Length: 361
Ligand SMILES: NC(=O)c1ccc[n+]([C@@H]2O[C@H](COP(=O)([O-])OP(=O)(O)OC[C@H]3O[C@@H](n4cnc5c(N)ncnc54)[C@H](O)[C@@H]3O)[C@@H](O)[C@H]2O)c1
Ligand SMILES: [Zn+2]
Image (cartoon, rainbow, N blue to C red):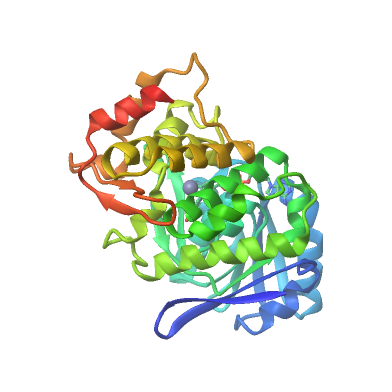
C-alpha cells in the first residue's frame, strides 16, 4: 500500500491511502482519524450495490455505528434537495458534532457528501472513498465540495478538506470503460501542465485492461501529488495558481453545457477542451505543433474524443462560454501551455481565438 500525506499548509495535512483490498479494512484505517462513533455512509445506487456492504461491515467491526444513505446515481442527484434530505436523515439517525460522513462513490458523491459534511453542525469530519478514476485522481483531492443548481454546476459549495482519503484501486474493475477513460483526461491534463515525464509514460502506456494494480496505484499517487502541489499554493482558488488545473476546462465546460450534460462525460468534454487549449497555445504561447499533435495522439490512445461530431453546433458552444465564471468580468483568463510540463494563466487570449479553436474541433 502507498501512503501519501497531503500537506496543504504548515500544520494541516491529511492522509491518502492507496492500495488494493482496502475496502475490507476501512474501519481500521478510520479509527485514527475520527472522534465519534456514529457515521453516515453516503453512496449512490450503483456503488451501494457493489461495495456498501463491505464498507459497512468493516466500520461495524471496528466499533462504529454506520447509517447507510443511498441516493440515485448520476449528476442529477448533486443538488441542495438531496443535501437537505441527507442532513434530515442524519438528524433522524441521531448524528451529532462528533459524527462523521463517509462518501463512497464517484465525484458526484464526493462533492455532495463533502458539502453535507461541511454544513452539518457547521462542519464534521469527511472520509472520502472514491470509486471512479476521476474521483481518485481529481475530485477527492483539494477540498472543493458543492452542489449544482438550475443556474449552473458547482456554483454553491464550500471548501472542506477530508480527514482521510482511501483509494482502493480494485474498485475500478467494475467501472464502465467510458468512465475509466474519462479519468485519463484529467491525468493527461496533469501531465501537460506539470509533468513531462508522466506524459512520456502515457505515450507508451498499455491501454488495455486489466492493469497491474501496482501500476494503477503509482499512477493515482503521482496525480494526487501533482494536484496537491498546485492546490497547496492556492487552497481557496484566489491567487490564480489553482486555476492552472482548469487547463482545457474553459472550452470543456462550454461543450458539456452545449451538450446539455448528456452528450459528453466531463472527461470527454475536457479532452476536446484540451485540444482547443493546445491550438490556442500554439498561437499564443509558442507550443510546437509537434507537441500539440503528441497531446492529440495520447488522448486518442485512451479512447477520448479529439474531434466534435460534424452535426454538433459550434455556435452553441461559443454561446455557452459566457456562463463560465472566468468570463464574468469581461476579461478572459485562459490557461495555456508553452510546452508539455508547464502552464500559465494569461489574459492574451481573445474570444476570437477561442471561437477559432472551437471551429477547428
Ligand atoms: N471537487 C472537485 O474538485 C471536482 C473535480 C472534478 C470533478 N468534480 C465533480 O465530479 C463529478 C463527476 O465525477 P464522476 O465522473 O466520478 O461521476 P459519478 O460520481 O456520477 O460516477 C460516474 C458513474 O459511475 C458509477 N460508478 C462509480 N464508481 C463505480 C464503480 N467502481 N464501478 C461501477 N460503477 C461505478 C456511478 O454510479 C455513476 O453512475 C462531477 O459532479 C464534477 O463536478 C469535482
Ligand atoms: Zn475536470
